[in-house]
Amino acid sequence: MNFLYANTYYIAAFGLIFIGLYIVMAKRNLVKVIIGLSFVDSGINLLLISIGYIKGGTAPIFSRPDISPLKMVDPVPQALVLTAIVIGVAVLALALSLVVRLYQEYGTLDIRKIRGLKW
Amino acid sequence: MRKIIALILLAMLLWGISKPISNIPFGMNKINVAKHYITKDISETGAANVVTSVVVLYRGFDTLGEVTILFIAAIGLASILYLPKKRVPDNPPVEDSSLILRTGCRFLFPLILLFGTYIFVHGHLTPGGGFQGGAIIASGFALMSLSCKERILSTVRLGVVESLAGLTFVTVGLIGLATGGYFLLNFLPKGTLNMLFSAGIIPVIYVAIGFKVGSELAGIIGNLMERTQ
Image 1: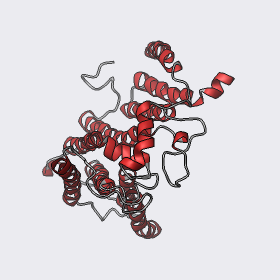
Image 2 (image 1 turned 60 degrees about the horizontal axis):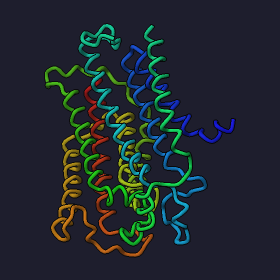
Image 3 (image 1 turned 60 degrees about the vertical axis):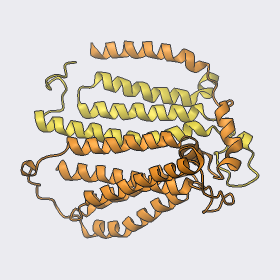
Image 4 (image 1 turned 90 degrees about the horizontal axis):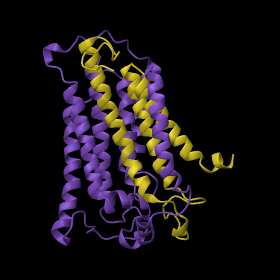
């Protein structure tokens, strides 16, 4: 129980990542595969943020001058995740547009029926 | 069968990952470079928000690359969805949205734009910045194109805004290179902490990023709405 309590964020992040990977490997509908990819994306963002966390820390913003720099959480993963979220949205849209074209070409979203995508 | 193979693969992956991750204690001390950023932030950049100064100044070149990824994704989406004029399928008859929806959207749209602008103008003082503000502005455009179908986004104008914003980013960086010797040098005065006009070039670049992200995401939404009827 103590282990679960101490590592809640890691467990949730890896839970999201592995659920997403399972969806990518096991599902046959292309839209579901993309949903799985966005699960992996969110899980990795959560993992990076939780690696940078410090117990009892504050946001790394000097909104008042008396905030001690020692109690601030790590700003580097936050800066990475901030851009990664927006890029994730754009890449998701790119993947969805590929799916739209595939549907227009083959009339199906099932990857078993699309030639050249044997799995 | 496939599902069993997938589960076995995931179990192996979990076993491999759990060992290195268990060496990173949760909620403990931060890495050295983060300590440098936090303690030197006020004297070096003058921005109250350390995350912003990491994104725009310490790792500004990296951010330029990330904005480029966004740009390439938007271009890829537009070229994948591109159809020659004669092959554009006839739009199915679209039912007009109701009066309540249209009025509410006309009321909300300027407020959403204002909120997004506030977020990216105050990026160096409060949580927020160009990426977040741009995403909020794009959500305003999404609301607009879902409820008021007669207003079609002009992709040409969005492209002009996006190019100007990108040019601003690169030009500000190159001015730093010309005056002080390295790309994205903070050549403007730093001002006093926690004021709107402080932190030198950080607000300028973040406003440019805000415009760029907003117009790119709005262009993505417009392309998806227009070409996938």
